[in-house]
Image 1 (spheres, rainbow, N blue to C red):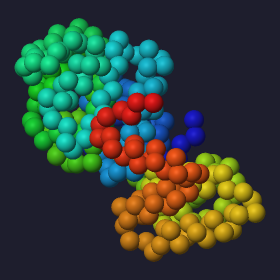
Image 2: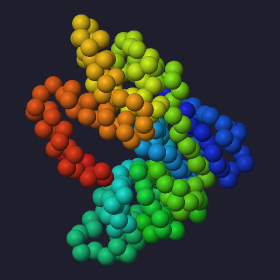
Image 3: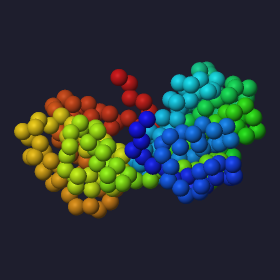
Image 4: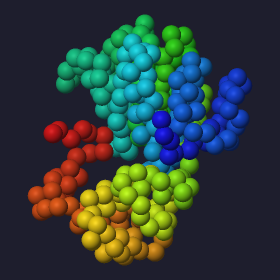
Length: 278
């Protein structure tokens, strides 16, 4: 599998890992670390756009395709997602009928009863936890105590979440190099393009993919004009957030019709942690 994202394994309590601390590792190395039996709780920490969710999905699908676990749970979260809402999401994934009036404590008990004797893989994506003993508060059996080979993967932007999760493995995605950024853009567009165009993307995979989406279908006779427009839209380098905002605006203007733009705006009405029905 081709890898465009490097990961730094920055902390572990497990001396048996062969990857040294602070070493840059590939996606394949990361998948091996995540899926090793010893790493019961894995945290992937970094700013938005670095590929944390993408990496977790790769690990999740790899595990599911190889039938490594009995139960698979993916829960998307947000800054506004309460513990109650998180437990409800987990219960829904497990097809537990919780009703409207069921107490949070009872939901936690039902989740624990469901998972206690199962080898499970749980992904908590985009988590913002601050409470100690967070797994217990969600009704999740501690994988270390359960001793069945269960695993929890959490992606987060905050060090506090990492602290309360107390992971066996902490992986920090790193920005892409200039060459890797260019290779990713070229792969997504399907043609060579000006190398300097990716310089303003700060090595962020999400920014590069957004840019590729706006340029991928450009006619050959209009490529020079469109690339010039992209340079103007990106503007001077200020920050990752500024670049992301500029790219979203550029992509919005590049949508093929007013209908597509209205659908784009409609999708923005949904909360971060809610699926968009199609």
